[in-house]
Image 1: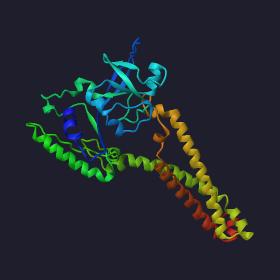
Image 2 (image 1 turned 90 degrees about the vertical axis):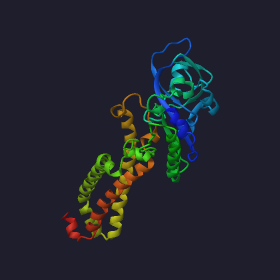
Image 3 (image 1 turned 180 degrees about the vertical axis):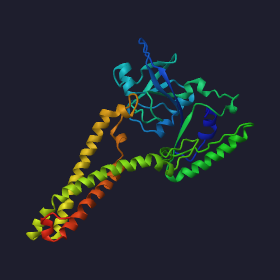
Image 4 (image 1 turned 30 degrees about the horizontal axis):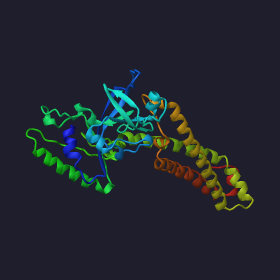
Length: 344
């Protein structure tokens, strides 16, 4: 979308907590006295960007609303770039040069992963400092198209519909000023969850379509280890049926036998889950180049969502316990002679 659409249809929104518009580009970044030819990811944005996305500032702070309105050439850079250019993260007040213009560094943030596509960058500057981004191509679609994307931060999930209604109201007012063009949001705005399902603004993803593609793969990845665990558990249990017969012969009750088997499997499952979690971190760190292109940094909170891990572990745990408890209960109810002879 164009800056005109952002200015007239998004910035006036009152329902959201924050609205930000941004665009990206790759430019060489230099400092006085040094010439570098490597290009870095530049994010042209506004002061609302720092409200919508969470950043960890290691030095200084973001540019302000006044800086953005005035088009002052300030920049926030990543700690990785700060060390590359200045040898330290204490780079606030230093000057860097991009596209024949000088920018004063006002803040240094912890490096953002490339996986965080909307917020990723090496340098973040006010887009108002770039005059070309403020020019709308009136000759094409009456200046409604452009390079900008936008993200909206809602105060709560209950505000989603109110935000959509307010956007449509502003859209109607905006369209009244046009002659041969009409602004249409189509399937925008969409939530992060809708984006996971495949919604991209031009088409809408559904749970059914997601289940046919990604969901089927996830279900397979869950069932495969679960079935393997069930097979291993049943195989190990068959070897212990004679042991159950011996214990019953010495007076052990059925409940205590089943309880012991369940506790043993519970402890084994928990140990296996912990080992699997640690191996997942290690293998993904070693093999991330197979899954991600370029220099992608991944933090622990990006690698695993606690709720997802707990759900997958609970699913596997239930299957494992059932595969142990049910045969144990059946074996404990068998005649001692059959259990001693390990009969089916």
